[in-house]
Length: 356
Ligand SMILES: [Zn+2]
Image (cartoon, rainbow, N blue to C red; front, side):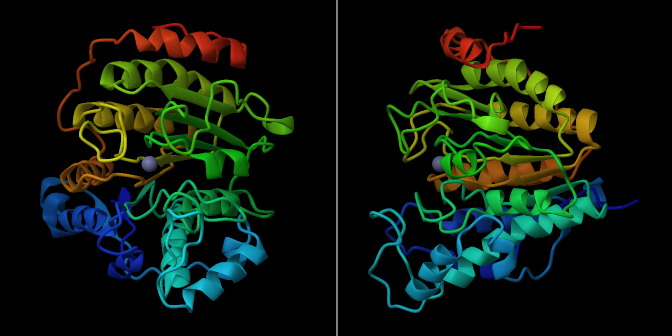
Protein backbone atom coordinates (compact mmCIF):
# COMPACT_ATOMS: atom_id res chain seq x y z
CA UNK A 1 0.00 0.00 0.00
CA UNK A 2 1.50 3.39 -0.93
CA UNK A 3 2.33 5.85 1.78
CA UNK A 4 -0.46 8.21 2.62
CA UNK A 5 1.55 11.18 3.84
CA UNK A 6 4.97 12.69 3.26
CA UNK A 7 6.81 14.53 6.03
CA UNK A 8 8.91 17.29 4.47
CA UNK A 9 11.78 17.73 6.87
CA UNK A 10 15.55 18.05 6.63
CA UNK A 11 17.62 19.07 9.67
CA UNK A 12 19.19 21.80 7.53
CA UNK A 13 15.82 23.61 7.65
CA UNK A 14 16.85 24.58 11.17
CA UNK A 15 19.18 27.15 9.59
CA UNK A 16 16.11 29.40 9.16
CA UNK A 17 17.00 31.00 12.47
CA UNK A 18 16.85 34.67 13.46
CA UNK A 19 18.72 34.11 16.70
CA UNK A 20 17.92 33.28 20.33
CA UNK A 21 16.07 36.52 21.20
CA UNK A 22 13.67 36.38 18.26
CA UNK A 23 10.07 35.15 18.72
CA UNK A 24 10.25 32.92 15.61
CA UNK A 25 11.99 29.70 16.67
CA UNK A 26 12.30 26.97 14.07
CA UNK A 27 13.33 24.52 16.82
CA UNK A 28 9.69 24.31 18.00
CA UNK A 29 8.80 22.87 14.61
CA UNK A 30 11.93 20.71 14.64
CA UNK A 31 10.59 19.12 17.83
CA UNK A 32 7.39 18.19 16.02
CA UNK A 33 9.35 16.75 13.09
CA UNK A 34 11.49 14.75 15.50
CA UNK A 35 8.39 13.44 17.31
CA UNK A 36 6.96 12.25 14.01
CA UNK A 37 10.24 10.77 12.89
CA UNK A 38 10.76 9.03 16.23
CA UNK A 39 7.69 6.88 16.10
CA UNK A 40 4.78 9.14 17.05
CA UNK A 41 3.65 8.25 13.56
CA UNK A 42 4.53 4.60 13.73
CA UNK A 43 4.09 2.11 10.90
CA UNK A 44 3.44 -0.59 13.55
CA UNK A 45 0.22 1.18 14.52
CA UNK A 46 -0.85 1.59 10.92
CA UNK A 47 0.38 5.15 10.44
CA UNK A 48 1.70 5.88 7.01
CA UNK A 49 3.99 8.89 6.99
CA UNK A 50 7.18 8.73 4.96
CA UNK A 51 10.16 11.03 5.44
CA UNK A 52 11.27 13.18 2.55
CA UNK A 53 15.00 12.84 3.08
CA UNK A 54 17.23 15.74 2.00
CA UNK A 55 15.53 18.89 0.72
CA UNK A 56 17.64 21.20 -1.43
CA UNK A 57 17.05 24.97 -1.68
CA UNK A 58 14.51 26.09 -4.29
CA UNK A 59 16.06 27.11 -7.60
CA UNK A 60 15.96 30.70 -8.75
CA UNK A 61 13.58 29.66 -11.53
CA UNK A 62 11.18 28.15 -9.01
CA UNK A 63 11.31 31.18 -6.69
CA UNK A 64 10.87 33.52 -9.68
CA UNK A 65 7.38 32.19 -10.25
CA UNK A 66 6.39 34.32 -7.23
CA UNK A 67 9.33 36.54 -6.21
CA UNK A 68 10.89 39.31 -8.30
CA UNK A 69 14.47 39.09 -9.52
CA UNK A 70 15.34 42.36 -7.75
CA UNK A 71 14.12 41.02 -4.42
CA UNK A 72 16.04 37.76 -4.81
CA UNK A 73 19.16 39.82 -5.57
CA UNK A 74 18.58 41.79 -2.38
CA UNK A 75 18.25 38.60 -0.30
CA UNK A 76 21.42 37.26 -1.94
CA UNK A 77 23.34 40.41 -1.05
CA UNK A 78 22.12 40.52 2.57
CA UNK A 79 22.84 36.82 2.97
CA UNK A 80 26.55 37.46 2.45
CA UNK A 81 26.72 40.20 5.09
CA UNK A 82 27.28 39.81 8.82
CA UNK A 83 24.16 39.87 11.03
CA UNK A 84 22.76 43.17 12.21
CA UNK A 85 20.57 44.42 9.37
CA UNK A 86 16.91 43.84 8.55
CA UNK A 87 15.23 42.76 5.34
CA UNK A 88 12.16 44.82 6.32
CA UNK A 89 11.33 47.61 8.76
CA UNK A 90 12.54 45.66 11.80
CA UNK A 91 10.77 42.31 12.13
CA UNK A 92 12.79 40.12 9.78
CA UNK A 93 16.54 40.15 10.41
CA UNK A 94 18.96 39.19 7.67
CA UNK A 95 21.59 36.66 8.73
CA UNK A 96 24.52 34.97 7.02
CA UNK A 97 23.11 32.21 4.82
CA UNK A 98 19.52 33.48 5.00
CA UNK A 99 19.15 33.11 1.23
CA UNK A 100 19.79 29.37 1.23
CA UNK A 101 17.80 28.84 4.44
CA UNK A 102 14.71 30.61 3.08
CA UNK A 103 15.01 28.90 -0.32
CA UNK A 104 15.12 25.51 1.42
CA UNK A 105 11.88 26.23 3.29
CA UNK A 106 10.32 27.27 -0.03
CA UNK A 107 11.45 24.09 -1.73
CA UNK A 108 9.93 21.92 0.99
CA UNK A 109 6.51 23.13 -0.15
CA UNK A 110 7.42 22.67 -3.82
CA UNK A 111 8.58 19.13 -3.07
CA UNK A 112 5.18 18.55 -1.43
CA UNK A 113 3.47 19.78 -4.59
CA UNK A 114 5.57 17.44 -6.75
CA UNK A 115 5.05 14.40 -4.53
CA UNK A 116 1.29 14.91 -4.65
CA UNK A 117 0.92 15.91 -8.29
CA UNK A 118 3.05 12.95 -9.41
CA UNK A 119 0.73 10.66 -7.45
CA UNK A 120 3.33 9.37 -4.99
CA UNK A 121 1.46 10.70 -1.94
CA UNK A 122 -1.97 12.13 -1.30
CA UNK A 123 -0.88 14.35 1.59
CA UNK A 124 2.26 16.24 2.49
CA UNK A 125 3.27 18.17 5.60
CA UNK A 126 5.91 20.89 5.82
CA UNK A 127 6.19 21.94 9.48
CA UNK A 128 8.92 24.48 8.65
CA UNK A 129 6.71 26.30 6.16
CA UNK A 130 3.75 28.66 6.08
CA UNK A 131 5.78 31.87 5.63
CA UNK A 132 2.71 33.65 4.32
CA UNK A 133 3.70 37.31 4.85
CA UNK A 134 6.50 37.51 2.27
CA UNK A 135 5.44 39.54 -0.78
CA UNK A 136 6.76 39.13 -4.33
CA UNK A 137 9.19 42.01 -3.80
CA UNK A 138 9.80 42.18 -0.07
CA UNK A 139 10.23 40.35 3.23
CA UNK A 140 7.68 40.84 6.00
CA UNK A 141 6.71 39.43 9.38
CA UNK A 142 9.57 36.89 9.83
CA UNK A 143 9.01 35.64 6.26
CA UNK A 144 11.79 35.93 3.65
CA UNK A 145 10.48 33.72 0.83
CA UNK A 146 6.81 32.76 0.76
CA UNK A 147 6.90 28.98 0.51
CA UNK A 148 3.15 28.50 0.16
CA UNK A 149 2.86 31.16 -2.57
CA UNK A 150 5.90 29.75 -4.40
CA UNK A 151 4.33 26.28 -4.37
CA UNK A 152 0.97 27.60 -5.60
CA UNK A 153 2.66 29.61 -8.36
CA UNK A 154 4.58 26.48 -9.39
CA UNK A 155 1.36 24.47 -9.48
CA UNK A 156 -0.24 27.04 -11.82
CA UNK A 157 2.79 27.72 -14.06
CA UNK A 158 2.37 27.11 -17.79
CA UNK A 159 2.51 23.35 -18.13
CA UNK A 160 2.11 22.97 -14.37
CA UNK A 161 -0.02 20.27 -12.80
CA UNK A 162 -3.06 22.27 -11.66
CA UNK A 163 -5.44 24.94 -12.92
CA UNK A 164 -7.26 25.72 -9.66
CA UNK A 165 -5.83 25.74 -6.12
CA UNK A 166 -7.66 26.44 -2.85
CA UNK A 167 -5.54 28.06 -0.14
CA UNK A 168 -6.87 28.03 3.43
CA UNK A 169 -5.07 29.93 6.20
CA UNK A 170 -5.82 29.64 9.93
CA UNK A 171 -2.75 31.50 11.25
CA UNK A 172 -3.66 34.20 13.79
CA UNK A 173 -2.21 36.75 11.35
CA UNK A 174 -3.73 37.55 7.98
CA UNK A 175 -1.87 35.80 5.14
CA UNK A 176 -1.33 39.03 3.25
CA UNK A 177 1.58 37.88 1.05
CA UNK A 178 -0.48 35.07 -0.41
CA UNK A 179 -3.75 36.97 -0.67
CA UNK A 180 -2.36 40.08 -2.37
CA UNK A 181 0.05 37.97 -4.40
CA UNK A 182 -2.97 36.30 -6.04
CA UNK A 183 -5.54 39.06 -5.55
CA UNK A 184 -6.39 39.24 -9.28
CA UNK A 185 -5.95 35.51 -9.83
CA UNK A 186 -9.06 33.56 -10.75
CA UNK A 187 -7.26 30.23 -10.29
CA UNK A 188 -6.70 30.72 -6.53
CA UNK A 189 -9.47 30.58 -3.93
CA UNK A 190 -8.08 32.06 -0.71
CA UNK A 191 -9.97 31.67 2.58
CA UNK A 192 -8.29 33.26 5.59
CA UNK A 193 -9.32 33.15 9.27
CA UNK A 194 -7.31 35.56 11.42
CA UNK A 195 -7.44 37.97 14.31
CA UNK A 196 -9.02 41.27 13.20
CA UNK A 197 -6.38 43.43 11.52
CA UNK A 198 -7.44 46.44 13.57
CA UNK A 199 -5.93 44.67 16.56
CA UNK A 200 -2.96 42.76 15.06
CA UNK A 201 -0.21 42.74 12.43
CA UNK A 202 -0.35 43.06 9.42
CA UNK A 203 -3.57 45.07 9.68
CA UNK A 204 -5.18 43.69 6.52
CA UNK A 205 -7.80 41.05 5.78
CA UNK A 206 -11.11 42.89 6.20
CA UNK A 207 -14.23 41.05 5.02
CA UNK A 208 -14.62 43.71 2.33
CA UNK A 209 -11.39 42.54 0.61
CA UNK A 210 -12.81 39.97 -1.80
CA UNK A 211 -10.44 40.02 -4.79
CA UNK A 212 -10.24 41.92 -8.07
CA UNK A 213 -10.68 41.21 -11.78
CA UNK A 214 -10.60 37.41 -12.34
CA UNK A 215 -10.07 37.01 -8.60
CA UNK A 216 -13.31 38.81 -7.67
CA UNK A 217 -15.27 36.95 -5.02
CA UNK A 218 -12.46 34.42 -4.51
CA UNK A 219 -10.64 36.09 -1.61
CA UNK A 220 -12.54 35.36 1.59
CA UNK A 221 -11.51 37.07 4.81
CA UNK A 222 -12.88 36.22 8.24
CA UNK A 223 -11.43 38.63 10.80
CA UNK A 224 -12.15 37.41 14.34
CA UNK A 225 -12.17 39.62 17.44
CA UNK A 226 -9.54 39.08 20.16
CA UNK A 227 -10.80 36.44 22.59
CA UNK A 228 -12.56 34.34 19.95
CA UNK A 229 -11.95 30.61 20.33
CA UNK A 230 -13.05 27.23 18.98
CA UNK A 231 -16.72 28.28 19.31
CA UNK A 232 -16.12 30.93 16.66
CA UNK A 233 -13.53 29.22 14.45
CA UNK A 234 -15.10 25.79 14.11
CA UNK A 235 -18.74 26.76 13.29
CA UNK A 236 -17.59 29.48 10.88
CA UNK A 237 -15.13 27.13 9.23
CA UNK A 238 -17.78 24.43 8.74
CA UNK A 239 -20.30 26.92 7.33
CA UNK A 240 -18.06 28.94 5.00
CA UNK A 241 -15.23 26.73 3.76
CA UNK A 242 -17.05 23.67 2.33
CA UNK A 243 -19.49 25.60 0.09
CA UNK A 244 -16.77 27.95 -1.18
CA UNK A 245 -14.42 25.06 -1.95
CA UNK A 246 -17.14 22.90 -3.55
CA UNK A 247 -18.17 25.72 -5.88
CA UNK A 248 -14.56 26.44 -6.83
CA UNK A 249 -13.66 22.78 -7.52
CA UNK A 250 -9.92 23.01 -6.77
CA UNK A 251 -7.54 20.31 -7.94
CA UNK A 252 -5.29 20.78 -4.92
CA UNK A 253 -5.73 22.27 -1.42
CA UNK A 254 -3.05 24.01 0.64
CA UNK A 255 -3.66 24.57 4.36
CA UNK A 256 -1.48 27.04 6.25
CA UNK A 257 -1.80 25.65 9.78
CA UNK A 258 -0.31 28.40 11.96
CA UNK A 259 -0.54 27.59 15.66
CA UNK A 260 -0.40 31.19 16.93
CA UNK A 261 -4.19 31.32 17.31
CA UNK A 262 -3.85 28.88 20.21
CA UNK A 263 -4.74 30.16 23.69
CA UNK A 264 -1.57 31.24 25.44
CA UNK A 265 0.35 32.23 22.32
CA UNK A 266 2.91 34.97 22.90
CA UNK A 267 1.83 37.15 19.98
CA UNK A 268 -1.79 36.30 19.14
CA UNK A 269 -4.97 37.09 21.08
CA UNK A 270 -7.23 34.21 20.02
CA UNK A 271 -8.20 31.24 22.17
CA UNK A 272 -8.21 28.15 19.97
CA UNK A 273 -7.53 24.76 21.58
CA UNK A 274 -6.04 21.51 20.31
CA UNK A 275 -9.60 20.24 19.72
CA UNK A 276 -10.47 23.24 17.54
CA UNK A 277 -7.41 22.68 15.37
CA UNK A 278 -8.24 18.99 15.06
CA UNK A 279 -11.82 19.79 14.00
CA UNK A 280 -10.60 22.17 11.30
CA UNK A 281 -8.08 19.66 9.95
CA UNK A 282 -10.70 16.92 9.81
CA UNK A 283 -13.05 19.21 7.89
CA UNK A 284 -10.29 19.96 5.38
CA UNK A 285 -9.39 16.27 5.01
CA UNK A 286 -13.01 15.32 4.31
CA UNK A 287 -13.39 18.17 1.87
CA UNK A 288 -10.17 17.30 0.04
CA UNK A 289 -11.37 13.71 -0.29
CA UNK A 290 -14.67 14.95 -1.69
CA UNK A 291 -13.40 17.52 -4.20
CA UNK A 292 -9.83 16.70 -5.24
CA UNK A 293 -8.93 13.09 -4.53
CA UNK A 294 -7.61 13.97 -1.06
CA UNK A 295 -4.69 16.01 -2.43
CA UNK A 296 -3.54 18.28 0.39
CA UNK A 297 -0.40 20.12 1.47
CA UNK A 298 -0.36 21.28 5.09
CA UNK A 299 2.32 23.67 6.32
CA UNK A 300 3.18 25.12 9.68
CA UNK A 301 2.89 28.84 10.22
CA UNK A 302 3.26 31.14 13.19
CA UNK A 303 3.36 29.87 16.74
CA UNK A 304 5.27 31.44 19.60
CA UNK A 305 4.69 29.03 22.47
CA UNK A 306 7.09 26.13 22.32
CA UNK A 307 4.80 23.48 23.79
CA UNK A 308 1.75 24.46 21.75
CA UNK A 309 3.71 24.45 18.51
CA UNK A 310 5.47 21.14 18.97
CA UNK A 311 2.37 19.37 20.35
CA UNK A 312 -0.17 20.68 17.80
CA UNK A 313 2.12 20.22 14.79
CA UNK A 314 2.91 16.68 15.98
CA UNK A 315 -0.83 16.00 16.10
CA UNK A 316 -1.20 17.35 12.56
CA UNK A 317 1.46 14.98 11.28
CA UNK A 318 -0.08 12.01 13.07
CA UNK A 319 -3.52 12.84 11.67
CA UNK A 320 -2.14 13.11 8.15
CA UNK A 321 -0.64 9.65 8.56
CA UNK A 322 -4.06 8.07 9.13
CA UNK A 323 -7.20 7.67 7.09
CA UNK A 324 -9.52 8.08 10.08
CA UNK A 325 -9.25 10.21 13.23
CA UNK A 326 -8.27 8.37 16.40
CA UNK A 327 -11.25 9.78 18.29
CA UNK A 328 -14.51 11.38 17.22
CA UNK A 329 -14.54 15.13 17.68
CA UNK A 330 -17.27 17.07 19.42
CA UNK A 331 -18.77 20.38 18.44
CA UNK A 332 -17.79 23.39 20.57
CA UNK A 333 -20.49 25.63 21.95
CA UNK A 334 -21.08 28.45 19.50
CA UNK A 335 -19.85 31.90 20.47
CA UNK A 336 -21.84 35.05 19.56
CA UNK A 337 -19.10 36.27 17.22
CA UNK A 338 -20.15 33.80 14.53
CA UNK A 339 -23.08 36.04 13.60
CA UNK A 340 -21.02 39.22 13.88
CA UNK A 341 -18.45 37.90 11.40
CA UNK A 342 -21.10 36.66 8.95
CA UNK A 343 -22.88 40.03 9.04
CA UNK A 344 -19.86 41.56 7.30
CA UNK A 345 -18.87 38.59 5.16
CA UNK A 346 -22.21 37.66 3.57
CA UNK A 347 -22.92 41.05 1.94
CA UNK A 348 -19.28 41.40 0.87
CA UNK A 349 -19.44 38.10 -1.04
CA UNK A 350 -23.12 38.37 -1.97
CA UNK A 351 -23.97 34.93 -0.62
CA UNK A 352 -25.39 33.34 2.51
CA UNK A 353 -23.74 30.69 4.66
CA UNK A 354 -26.62 29.01 6.50
CA UNK A 355 -25.96 26.58 9.34
CA UNK A 356 -26.67 22.94 8.45
ZN1 LIG B 1 1.14 34.27 12.48
